[in-house]
Image 1 (tube, rainbow, N blue to C red):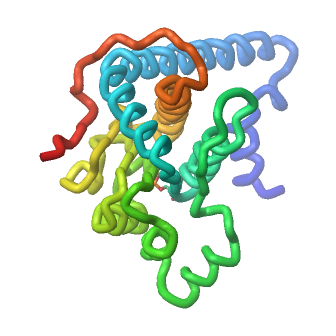
Image 2: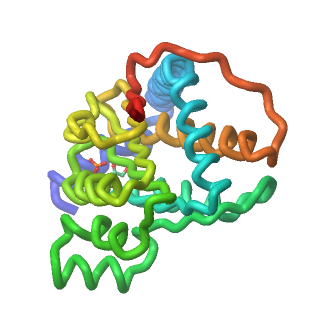
Length: 238
Ligand SMILES: O=C(CO)[C@@H](O)[C@H](O)[C@H](O)[C@H](O)COP(=O)(O)O
């Protein structure tokens, strides 16, 4: 191992190099930073819960309406958001309890994703699928931490053209998604840490799932109190 690599490993795993005397100090530091991180996560989730409760409930009601009329949910995102999109589709379509709802993740079919990326372009990898599968009664559900992924933005533009309900989760200040007037529901997690954003987005979509189930009469549940719409946007329909 080169000097540089060894320094890298030392930085990542300091306890491997600590002598018995230093070890407890290193462990105390690791535990301090873990506790700080845990506080940060709880603080952000609380902020999100308090400020978005009303908007999440409104979004769930709109989603439930689409499902009740036979609508389907299409989810998409890149990287970590792609696996979150898979989790959203799984939660809705294959719940252990509650009503199974029609949901499909547009990142799950490798053949379709690679064909579109290879033959047409990665920027249309979701939009083309939305065009092929989506209809007016359906729901487009996209996640992006930056809010700037071109393929996510284009998918929403296509979904809006088709009259689909559009639901977006973003971070930072919403990025390009914040500038999309077509979005029906936008939830912006107020953080600049990709990981914190993803964690808080998980809370938002799991609550959306629970409230949608509740609205469909599948799971009795306490209602949530309305909150400030500071970090959310719900489009008024004429
Ligand atoms: O942060 C992770 C994993 O946690 C990355 O995989 C991340 O998701 C990828 O860089 C994405 O391509 C970022 O896209 P986006 O969230 O900005 O739309």
